[in-house]
Amino acid sequence: MFDSILTESSSCQLERIRNAISNKSESSVYAAMDLGLSILKDRIDRFRSDLDAIGKLGDWESELVTYNRAIEVMEGYYSGNSKGLTEYDARIYYGHLDRQLQHFSGIASEIIDSAGDEA
Image (spheres, rainbow, N blue to C red):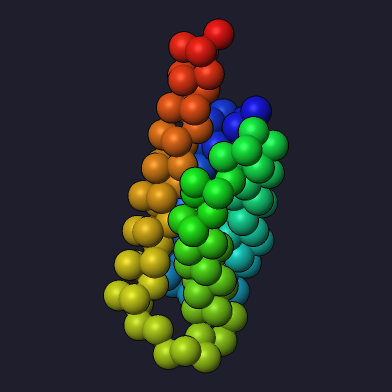
């Protein structure tokens, strides 16, 4: 349980997303979208399923929805930028993705620790 958040490193995905913000070459955008954002989305979806399985999804649903929205905004930035985001806007969203992923890891650790205390 919570392997997607606790055992998988996110540094490669986040680096790909960050690097493509200022260098929107075809290869950088591919890396950000397919090797960054899509992997983070999958990890968050698995984390959501894990929370749901133990009855804790309601506690964190809003934060997970917000995280997925940030992923969608970044996908839009890389695929035409119809909302007209600036590079600075993209960096703010990137920072949110990075911080919240660390936050979710902390949540998973706390849940595991509290389950161990109850045993």
